[in-house]
Length: 209
Image 1 (cartoon, one colour):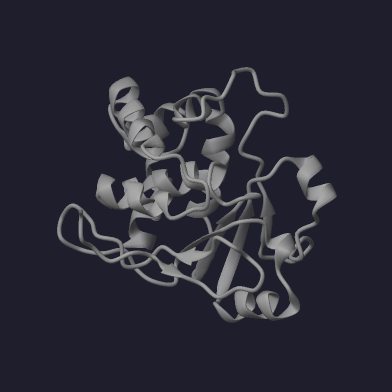
Image 2 (cartoon, one colour):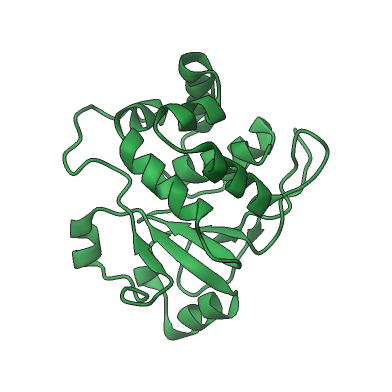
């Protein structure tokens, strides 16, 4: 079993899948910074103490990856706040059949939207950035994996973090990373191919390191 520090699970009542992605090991022997990138499930679940906990964390940007209809059905408690950005990650109607064991097709078919979401991370004000969708596993997992890879986090640590999400599919993130390596030459070439500028990639690297 690989032994390395795990991201810190956060007590944000009643979120079920919230954690700080600081402390993850990188390929050059470093670790990611704490308090700069968070992931979570649907913030509509937050109780008033949970909302207060999010504000106390010093978060300056919330990136909501859900579809518009999800936001209408389950409003984000921060909608209308200057820190909130709604950046849907997926096509309104999927043009592919998503497999259950890889997010490779999600990356293949949603490049423009993924580029916008990644740039939302890159341009965030100083402080913490929070990424979330509904369950905090699939869409959030794909985007955070790209950000962590850009920061140099080891593939094993990226996969282990994904595996901490409820109902994570064993091996799905490893297959996704392999898909990106084989088809695009790695996460950075993938991001460049979908239109993310080099300065945005470097900004995310600096933020997490």
